[in-house]
Each structure stands twice: as structure tokens, then as C-alpha cells.
Image (tube, rainbow, N blue to C red):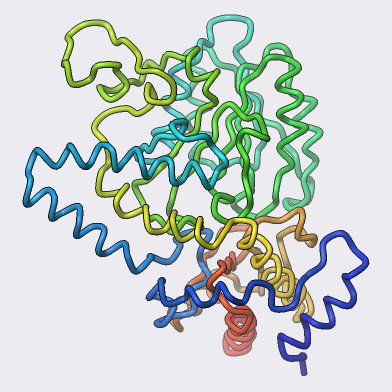
Length: 410
């Protein structure tokens, strides 16, 4: 019989005290006081926060507020909507360590990187986009299609076993012909946490731009875009930010923003959009030139409570709690004989653990039917992603249910 979770933590605490990254017992249990802010937690075991974070209870009211403004004020509602979208952009910017006024909201990452790509000139010698074969496929589609404009894509295999990565291979591929290096902070299949700094350092040596995709890390792993010195940081709100779909976001380093001229520009990217000038665009200053067309107001209203919830909990504390849940989860999965397709050490891992109990697709489907919210990725298994509002008991319960389902399938 396995020990109770609190005893397991105590055992681990004693074993890990001398190491650099101790697994703490009951770390930040006070965050569980916020469970009532996420109503779905009372209805199911919700461990899919790397795919769609739980909705904050205030989101419903915020959408009503948006609708009331539209219904009551009509077109005059724009006087409230425009500054509110800017305020919400600064909220997510604060989670990223971005200064106020350096982050804008867009619909999604595909929209955002299409705009970034439209800034770049691929007709010269410096025309390479260098990235790994572990990137999000949707982003790869966009970068690969830049070949029609003269880009050369260099896709670097960085893993021999699908989990552990050799990022030096990516560093070595960055040369004087490299224009852009897109990198994911956390890899979506395996939860591998990428060390961004050596990649950025090499890009700086050769004069290349760096785009950090923090979709799988924002709200779960601390990020400081200024300290990391990335040129762009992009992501969305459906995962650990608990902000829902339609609220993509991008940070642009101020010194870089002033030098770029997106061809994919909308009227909110014009310095005097409401003058409706039928002439060549005059770019708005800084990140505002990346704002695109008409703002996604309802998405911003919906996202704000999730952002605020993360800020109130504190990303550092969220990270510590995440490790105190995912490390026992990982080791318990191994003890049960399951395959784990995530890094073993917490310092190399993001917020989820990818587990293959065997029959992964069937087990996943049955888990959903039984009220356990997780997801499945072909070739790697079931992704289990607790957030700060989840309990250790929920983590062990999903492993118990995996075992039970496998026995039934047998």
C-alpha cells in the first residue's frame, strides 16, 4: 500500500533537503482557499490546466458588464472599452515582467506571429528562421510558409528520446545569416522547460531576433521578459492564465518595436486611427503598431479575472506549489509502472506531467467520461496538469483511476 500523500511529502522532504530543489510538504496550502473562485472544481477533477484553465467565477459577471455597456451605451461604449483593453494588456504584461505599455492583445498566436513575420525582410543574406523540431505545429506552419517570401527555415532536431533536449544543437545552428529564432519556453508535448538564456546570448552575438512562445509557461512558470532580453514574447490565455480563448497577447521589446513596420497592420496600428486617413500608414509608437484591427473587447473582459487571479496568487508561489504537486505525481506514476514522457527533475519541467499508462487514448477517453479532465497527445500519452487550486489528493486519484481503467480494459 502506498503511503498517504502527506507522509509521502514528508519522506521526500527529508530525502531532498540537501539537494538544490527540495520538494516541500504541503507547500502554499493557503492557495486552496481560492478554489471557490473556480466553480468547475466542485463538479469534476480538473487537471487539464495546460489546455484550458478553469474559468474564474468573476468572468461571467465581466461578460455581463461588457454586454451591459453595449446594450446601454451603444457606440459610446468604445470610450470604456478601449482603455479597458489596454488595462487588461498591462495585467498580462505584469505576469510576464513587462513594463506597462509594452504588451497588446490580439486574437491568437497564429495571428500574432503572422504579424511578426510581416515585419521581416527575407530578400537579403540574413534570411534564416532557426527553430527546433519540438515547436508547436501551428507556429511551424506559419514559419515554413515564409519560404514563399525568400525565408530559409532551419529546423533543428534537439531530442533523441523525445523528452530530454540538447539545446546546444539549436545554439550551434544560429549563425550570421539568422534573422529570427522562435523558441517555446515549455514544450507542449513533454512539459520540457527550455533554458532560454544561451539561445538568446547566441542570437545577440549574431544580431538575430528572438521570439519566446510562453503559451505553456505563462501563469505557471515565472517569466521576466526584460531579464531574459527577448525581443518578442507571445502566448494566449486559455491555459494557466485561466483567461479563455480569443485573448492572445504579445510583448515587444521597446527598442525593437520602434524599428519594425508590420505589413499586416490594422487601423489600431495607425498613429491616428480615428482620423480615418486614406493614405500610407503612419505607425503608432511602440507596441501599439502591432495592435491590428478592431479590438477583441469581450475576450479582454473575459480574461481579466483569470489574469488577476494569477497575479494575486503570485507566479513564484504558483511555481513552488506546482512542483510540490507534479514531482510526487511523476514519481508515483513511475512507481505504478507507467511510462513518463516528461523530464524527471522539476527544474527541467513546466507545469504538467505526460504519462502513458498504456492504452493511453482509451484510458483518456474513459477518464473524461468519469469526470477527470485531462488530455491526450498522440505518441506521448496523457497530460496531467494541476494548477495552484488543485490538491494532492486529486493527483493521486487520477492515477488510481488510470490503474482501474487499465484493469477493466484487460
